[in-house]
Every structure is written in structure tokens, then in C-alpha cells.
Amino acid sequence: MATLDVVLEGLMRRYRERVPVVGKIVAAMIDQGMIGNVHEIENDHIAFRTMGVPHLGIQSLEKIFTHYGYMRRDHYHFAAKKLDAYWYAPPQDYYPRIFISELRVGDLSEEAQRIIRSYTDEVPSDPVDALPLDDGAVVDDFLHRSLWRTPTWQDYQRLAEESEYAAWVIFNRYYLNHFTISVHNLPSPYNRIESFNAWLESIGVRLNDAGGKIKMSSDGLLLQSSTVAELVEAEFDDGHGGKVRHQIPGSYVEFAERRVLPQYAHLPPESIARHHRRDGFETGNADKIFESTYRSQIERQESGGKD
View 1 (cartoon, rainbow, N blue to C red):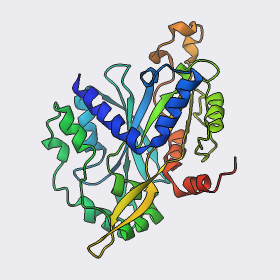
View 2 (view 1 turned 120 degrees about the vertical axis):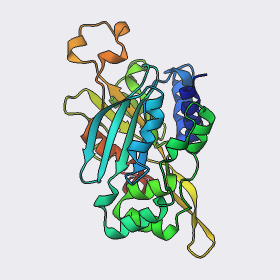
View 3 (view 1 turned 180 degrees about the horizontal axis):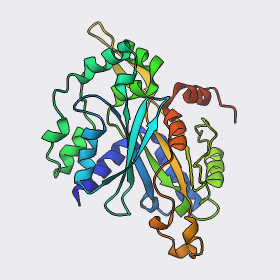
View 4 (view 1 turned 135 degrees about the horizontal axis):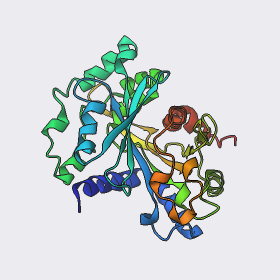
């Protein structure tokens, strides 16, 4: 097994354990006859969140994946959320794209910056530089271990008031933020996101409705939706030498329909490959997908929603 396969399998294994709705969706897809097994799902992309501070952030995490042949592509800026991001094209089409975002920590209030740096300053050098990147098990372990001390519940809450993204990263670190089911490769009628969303809701899956349940690119060729993040039991420092547990937003599942580019519209369906479809991402879409971990979405879910 290639090193990249080991890393990706480790990420997905722990992600599935932490996000039970993944298993629910996959089992229902099999029952519905959309797929025969989980391996028939095309993973459109996976995503990570990072802190834009010395020794960390995009410039650090991307080294892992560029080592395995990923190529950095377009830059995206999210002014209101104080984020930057890049996406990375895989070495072969059967691997997922990667989307890495970064919090512009310097754009936050002085108090929020102080809180974040009180943790991230515990990382004195770029940790990826010390990793044996050809050892998949070591890289997998790195992506799932603490980079700094356990945050206090008070610090987590204070960060969440200003940036829910900051709060998510201070606790979750490099945990996989989401993986993405490629809807367009499913059998009709589920190969259209409108139909797939309707089916998801019919089995009790609640969707992020920030900006509408379907986020569409300006060219109409990239359509995305996502579940609302599931709550996970998290242990915090209580600030007095003890521990306290609270439920906080974890990770979620995304769905993407990439439509065929106009210049390939004449091709028969059986001839369509990944390079014939719309590639990359869209700032407007991603901006609302980020809100899948926001309390406003989770509280709507807990209250039964208003669909």
C-alpha cells in the first residue's frame, strides 16, 4: 500500500468513528441500491482547518501532501470569516482533492490572538519538518495527536464568540473536517444534488441551510451541500487543575455535483471522466459550507429545524 493510501485510510477510519452519520448515509445508499459498497463512493475532496501562526498553518500542513504528489492550485480569501485557503490537485484522479484553510489570526482582536498564541506558541518549530513523511503510520499519528495543551473551556468559549472557526481548530486541530461524496457519479436520479438532498432528508439527515441548502457556483457547474456537524463529547481543562466535559461541533459530510464543462457536453455519459467536469472550488460556496460547524446550524438541527 502506498504511503498516501495509509495516510488517507487513517484519516477516514478515525473520521468515520467520530462522525456516525457517515455510516448511516453509506448504509442507506447501499440499501437504496446506489452503490454496492463504500469503495464505490468517489471522495471528491477532504478538508483541513489550520491556524495562521508561525510554524503552522497552510505552509506547514501542505508539505505532507505535496510530498505525496499533490499540487497547489487556486487561492481563496474569505474576508468576513478572516480565512485564506488553497486547494490541491491529487497525483492521480482516484485520490481526493484536498482543501486547506487557514485562520488569519493577526486579523482577530488582541485578546483572541493572545489566547490562540498561548497555545500555538508551544510549537517552537514546524513539526512537519521533523516527520518521516515516507512512514504513513507516523504521519497518520501526527494528524491525530495534540499539538498543544488541552484548551480551557473558558478560552474555547471566548474564541467561539469571535470566530467559531478558531474555536473549532483550538480543540480539533488537524482532525478531518469533512469528506465529500461525489453525487454526479451515482445512478439517476441521485446524480443530481437536488434529488440526492431530498433523499438525504427523507432518511432524517439534516442539511446546512446557510445560503440555501444547495450552494451553486457563479457558472452553475459546481453544486454543493453538507450535513450539519455532529456534536462530540470533548474534555477541556477547567482552569483549576481539573477537567470538564462539554459537547462541541465535530465534523460533517459534504456532497458535490460537478457538472460537465460546456466544451464536453457532446460526450456520451460513459465517456465522461474527472477532467471533463468542473474542477476547483468557489469562494461563495465554501464560505457557507464553513458554517456547517456553526452553532446557529446545530441549534436549528436540535430544535427540529424549519425546512
